[in-house]
Amino acid sequence: MTEKRGLPESLHTLMKQLVQQKQIHMAGTVLFVYFQRHWQLDEEKAAYYTVRYFRKYFPVQWEKEQQKEQRRT
Image 1 (tube, rainbow, N blue to C red):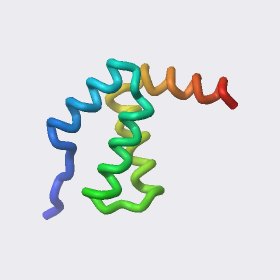
Image 2 (image 1 turned 135 degrees about the horizontal axis):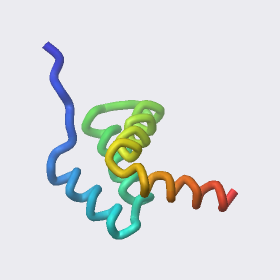
Image 3 (image 1 turned 90 degrees about the vertical axis):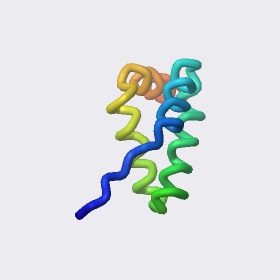
Image 4 (image 1 turned 45 degrees about the vertical axis):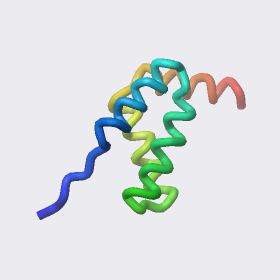
């Protein structure tokens, strides 16, 4: 049987707090490192899951951050 992986409640709460404070870049960094260290994923998979998480739970904030990134380049 496959073990279902999920984020601990404390980490999910931290993500919500950081996003509410408009610190989505910091939240992404924390989540990326969590995926690498605790789930032992390579950088590519960790980045994929980080993006997927933000698209699912914070779609509006994710879009705003993407628009800011596009304006910078």
